[in-house]
Length: 254
Image (cartoon, rainbow, N blue to C red):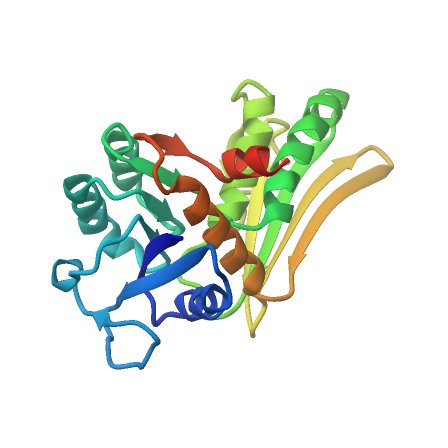
């Protein structure tokens, strides 16, 4: 059985993961860490990582970007594999993730869903065909009104997949309100919508002459992300240092 620490356990995703893990035999949450430790859980909860005394095989993080620097230091010091699910990291933090992965196993993914990770592969293949045929590429993402970062990490990951397929020839456009010119053929537009309780929707639009091809993914429940995070934790436990992705998890499951 894999023993896990839930970092950000009292957040919305932390609670979803806790509920899912409680019904599984392959994994056990032995402790949680949260800035608000008052909420009751089926495991001990601490306000800092240093207070945690339970032995674990892996940490799953769904906290805040501000906590990532310290979390990386802790995982490197303890040689504790980390499933890093928090989005909205700065370029400096992303570089630190890369550096830390040279010392400990880290799985970083902008989205833990199986469907989204399949979508990343599909749009890459589509871009190779459609962009060369003159299709414009746009990404529209929608999330609930409490999400802090915009655009979403998943939207950026989708844009990166498109750009990777096209030899990094494109740039990203987030706001056209100050521009008065026609669309640059070498741009990928990314738009963010925030409202209500939308769990997560992503559309990748290929707009050509007289036809449009759209790839869509809709999340109806946070449970899909929780299940993916747990699968990632089981996969990562015991792995050597390196930077892993959900694609690695999917490949082992096939």
